[in-house]
Image (tube, rainbow, N blue to C red; front, side):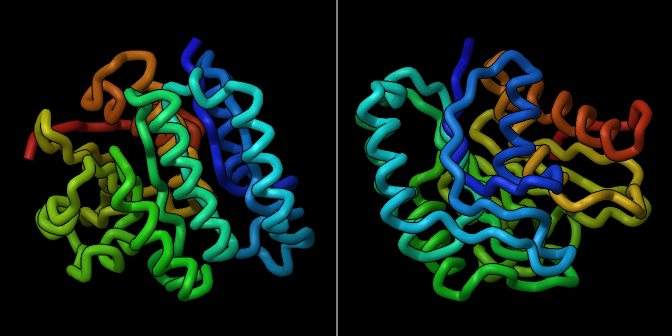
Length: 255
């Protein structure tokens, strides 16, 4: 079985963050190592979440224990997601470097969780800056939403063409979600193998956390199939169907 390390949030009563990612990929037959950066009761967008960030001492200790177990050498991928402090981001960067030493062919996926359209920045400014500075350059694949891509690139992202131009400004492959396409919503994949756009009808009442889920399911399909393009089609269809409660009309085309 492939194995993924997830470094992100644990949210007890909301299907978001690292906890939702672990559940999703384990259903796909992927083993996980989960290191929570926060323990919340519910999604912060719903009100006071309860809980708190994992203290730096505890986070560093858990990372050290995972490393001492020998688990880093068995990883096929690592997903770095939600961080509460810039110090946590720095710990994530150090962990990525250790993982690359232990498993040189590992796939490092950075989900630069920092904000969204209509909400704006929902992490501290210093956290967003640390993610851009310390994590994005270390990634093999980044998975921002359209708003995050615009912030990271300094370019407007309003459609598939502008999203493609912004995503191409990074050295890593990119999986960009929430691209507005009229009555559809798009997911863009840029990679050395080519650029693809998956699209499906918008779902007005889509729940929070679908970007987290898309990242995890994409990684699961990527590990199992070995193909970025196959992972795009499968992951987009899976997440769209989960949101709609029925099979979704997903179309994938080259750009």
